[in-house]
Image 1 (cartoon, rainbow, N blue to C red):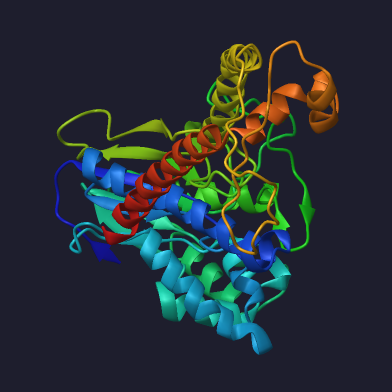
Image 2: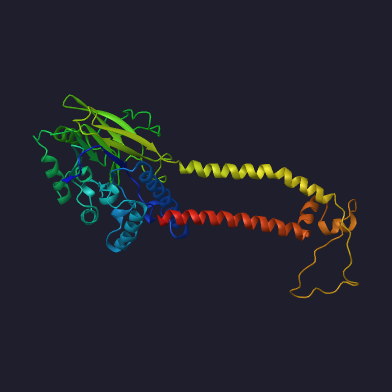
Length: 412
């Protein structure tokens, strides 16, 4: 059991960062590097911002820290240390005294009968045991490894979770309890999730390779009856969901928190801010707020929209410029009395005779009036120099600003 000081406590709750890696989308090389870079930057900026603006007293991550953690074993175990370093870089605490707690997810250790012993042992060595309780503001937060508890056969991981759950049998709660589980508890298919949910679908039961959407009904009922929580926090689904269970004649609200990443199928990531107040001071012992993060995909969409609008708006100006160029008469000033053979490496002098209204030589050189604007553009070296300079300066400024932001992201 971990005990923190009494008093009002603000708890930042985030889940499913699932650091993108080679397992996520089968990427390699530059595409993978860019995906990892911009995924990490997004979470690092938001994690830094929530610490600076909200100043939580503690931080909780509800599991699935890395996308392919359970896969980095055996011949691929060397992948794990760099991924762990990425995780620590993204979720770097501004104040080292701020406690940070973790829960085990199916991407971390596997699920049910397929929990991987080596991944489970590595998780315990890295993040601590997956079953524990915390005393906060005269309340108890119970962290239960429902991922391992969902197994139908005995194993060290399952047995540890079973012993921990059974320790609450017949134990009358001294104060309110808050249950933390990575997998949401059972509810009938089609149950509403409240207005915060972004997907049209609900959380229905389903299963596949190393995952299950909900804890089975019988185990969910046992967990609620033994722990008797007043609030349940869960993750895994990647979107918001508020559902009310009934246990012992009492209503128990479960909040499923949205993913903290913008690459996990939810374009509107977020986190929860949980405020715990000692029950002796207020009748409301726990309150929470759903905090939305910037929709990164929408930002990129606006980039594309603004670029398109800029091009469309500039097109008439370029057209008028071309027409003015076509209407201008140029007279060739002879530079040589005869046409010398161009010297190798010499700088070309690309002046041409372009007299408005002529057709003979001009048509031969330009290939017809339809290509006249292109010939004017190419033949005027001053225009090319100005355009090149403006373009280069614009790109340079953009790259410099972007580099400065990257330095700020990773320096803090």
